[in-house]
Length: 540
Image (cartoon, rainbow, N blue to C red):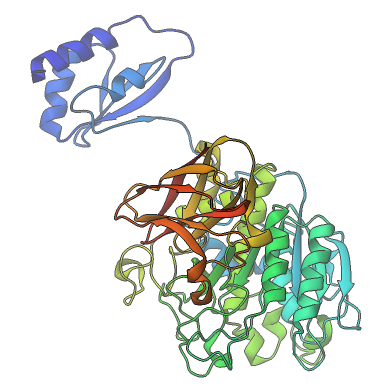
């Protein structure tokens, strides 16, 4: 189509009579010269914004405008409203609120359905003014009351998430629609028993938590099994939460608890599938040395230095001359300059809770996808000199942007994955019935590399399996013999019945079962990437 013909087409369209309810649109052009030619061809009630290369038209709909050659963009115009600003006096000192764009989405304090968020930590100052009416339930798994916090860590974390907003005192929590579930798992000596953590996760799920914050962790060191603290019980507790549509957010850990700093591995439970692992950012946008790195399990970053939050009033009472009792500004030097991934994680927890409040039926994997997919990439231009473009070991997918996540929530939801967790063989696999099944699910190299399905075959029964993996990835297909308990275990490789591991996203295999039983179909990513796949299973 010639330029003259394209302009004539546009002129005919814009000359149509205007209908009631017409909207105003900005139409961009490559240059002012192109805009001038366009304006001369159109005529009529069209406003040029030259020297800005754009014009404004008023029409009932815009789809035809988007199809016109030469239009670089079409944008519906509307008045913006001022973002909500909390009246809490210390909010201006909470730099993470602005960095995360915590309240930019709302013109006023939102009134949304309540969302239960569990804080598995050292307890809370239950009488603190910021938490009145905010604590839905509490339980201690270490003997002392969950409403007593002698260490301050749990109260600090809870304040970042759920301190009362707009009450003209103290700080503002990031999630005004949360009800807190307080699970105390930290003993008086600062240790955390795995049994207490697992029981706390179970309790939180049973009490209706939609998000669980774990700003605690055990050392991960895949090079030294003797000091690696992986726990099957902890992993089972995380699976229990995931099965019941609960998102677990965890800090990736601090280097001062590792053999050296910085440490290249996220702690547990952040280093487990389906857990959203969070690292820390400095005010400059850089990744501080204390924040653990991880090429796989570090998913997202949030401010982790100079964080201001609530503290038990018993810990601030020693500074009697400080007017802001009950806040870290009146604490010891460590609290006044609080830093750590422990305080970055609850910011992500709060953002997740507000997404759920806006869309109560959303699933945890969709929340994770929204938060990571809308993160602001950390790179030299944003202050992280060591961070390459896109995902990296320092900040994962980048800095939390709560407003972008909320906007994307209103535009398009990520895909669901209804059969998670199905990451291993045995009881962890999703059972698939029927002669012919076609399934759609998702894989994520950094969070969910493998899906496993159990299929029942008769003796000598043939089966054909095919998969179309996420575009641009290498997707593999493996069939395992009955009685397989673990996939991707070196000791299990002799249990592979058939496999298809060609390069690219498409794989298929056929097999005649030598004996009856439950076989396991594994779909696994062999390269970095993420997205939707389709799996077809046809039994003869």
